[in-house]
Image (tube, rainbow, N blue to C red; front, side, top):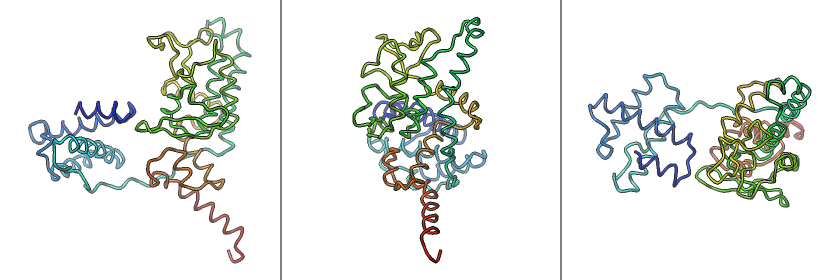
Length: 325
């Protein structure tokens, strides 16, 4: 199990979130084996019926279908690893019938709602500077760099449709200013080039102009700042003293603040901004295959969750154009 998890993190480039979920799934199965069979799992000797019993056990725990499918996704990946390493001849979880996931339409913001959200960081800065005398007395003057960084982050998330992990990994050298492209490192360390709009590039340039010095090519585009003079946080400096990227946790906390300021649901996630990006492209006439490439989906079936958008657009075109609609 440990060899597989190391392989997942270092060779396949899985995110810490994925590694944590897969570890939890494998440990859950191992605990079940000890409880039901009185011993740790003997992976080469386990059979399909063992996993059917485990599936029934998970169902009795009232777990959601997505959680059950995630657990078996971890087990399938683990057995593929064991097969490749020659530890087992075949996977006993291959083609096991699992509960189908519920069909949910991705939640997204309207264009107007997104514009409200994009305005929120600089509006928050304006409010903070207006209240600066009272804030300064408490020893926490407003940090312009952080607000401009947050504005640039929101512009970039919406402009490029990035996952939160992809945005946090962006380096200054990944930005191709003349071509208006950004190199993105996606899941499994797969790279793709994504167009980036002029407003996002201008927002990044405005943010960088407030830094003590422009980022070097290997420095993060969006840095983690301390409350002192906009400098990168001392707690988050690497061994060579280079600035550290903003963390997903900090980004999510800041996003909640701006959602509240914009009068939107604070439970909206960065991933729902990615859904908004895809939905708005499709509503404007982009084809599903192009959106798949822009999002970095390995399979078109992943992108087909947005099919309802293209269907609605086609119906509008039909109703407007067909004489017998």
